[in-house]
Image: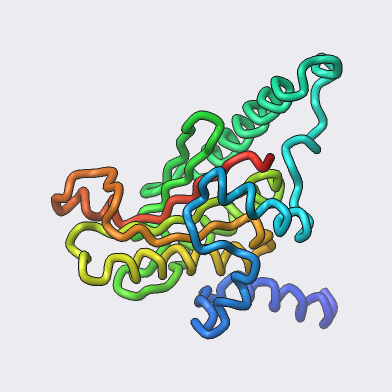
Length: 223
């Protein structure tokens, strides 16, 4: 192997060993430009659509429909395309994210990725862990493929963090949003919120609190 090949192989191996760190907080607005900091309601998605389309966003209606749908009702066809598209997205995420603390669920046509805090972040530091970076890279890769979706990135804490709950939960959500932005996800697709201790998914005991500290990425067909 010549010197140039050795040099580039060494760079590649070194890059794989570098620990990810979130950029300085002062840079977050730059990385998250185009994201909305509000709940992803239907009204909010409709209002955001011009920004989304202006940033190169894709709608479900642009997805190629099976030939059998060529002459059907447009609304029914679009719904069928959405169901199929989101089912395929769910299957890919499920197959790729079989890790402790990570789950993928369906809610109608929506797909929800649940990321328990300790599965993606350092235990005693507010930053993405190496395992979390690997998980989020996998999610980024799949979300770039299924790009006709809006996403809500919502952070949650447990009930013990009531005094700082909203700030902590928003911090988690923003860190995930920044990471996805750095890895090629269009921020015009994003809604980012911190919900504090609201909407617990487990009991508020020692084990349940670990589950309630989480980030949820909810994916909705872009129409």
